[in-house]
Image 1 (cartoon, rainbow, N blue to C red):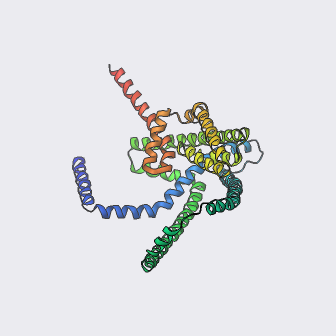
Image 2: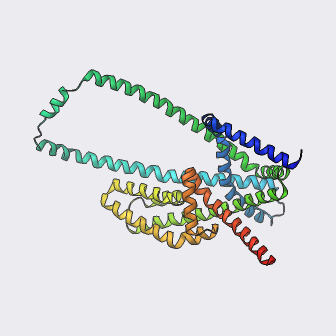
Image 3: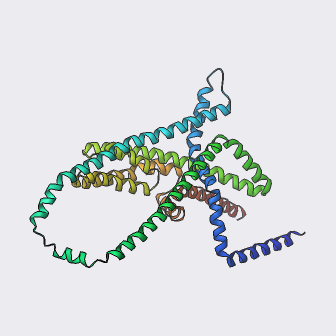
Length: 373
């Protein structure tokens, strides 16, 4: 078959397929939803493995340089396995440290709130007793209630609550099962990353044209490097911001300094949105202790956040990714609108790669035009 005939046949098949898909759009969307549910553990495991690969790669390079001086050097697989376990241990330690700081502080906050309510109950009771309230309107309102109809509504509400509770339990079990499979898949992907990359390169080179394969492999290489730089810079910026928040809360004598610092460091990994989440939670925790201190907490938090955004973030994260604040904001906005928090995280390095490739193509075209002229 001639190349033009193949092209015509391909265009015809694609057009007919799109036309049938539009006619049965509901069935296509249902099939797409089932397909997403099917591959969701694999996608989640791949994303988790990508996050783990950044510290693993750095640890592996440092371990290789460290063992290079030893008389008996371990194998590459042993170093890779050791870097994986060190990374996993670091993640577990961070989670344990966060829970260790978070749970006691929350228990103390709610305990103090309970003590305040308990101490104010006699004063509230005395105030209501001193008002000499007329309760005739309440008795008249109670007499006009149809108790049989009210009982019927309560029974229907209980049935609805039970159905929603069963659905919530089923969704929770589904989430737990998906998270378990995703964790196992991420472990296998992290341990067999070199083999998976080799198989992927082989398939790309076998089924694509050389120019297309080279372009796709270059894009993947640039994205991995850009994502590693972004995650490294974001984690460094999160640690700096957490330390600044802890010091600021200690200087201005605001409670929960260590908790706010840890919470800010964890949430700051998410660009833009993380700062808002940690600010709201911090003000709420301080509000449980003293409403006046909550105002001071908000002012101090916004001041530290402003200093960090103006002087620290551009130097730490901006240089690591190579994006201006405008492009970073646009990428975060589009990614968040499409895919939520995951989109915010991934669209920033993706935008950096796209801009870099566009710059290279523009310079190549300008050089070609200058050469021809």
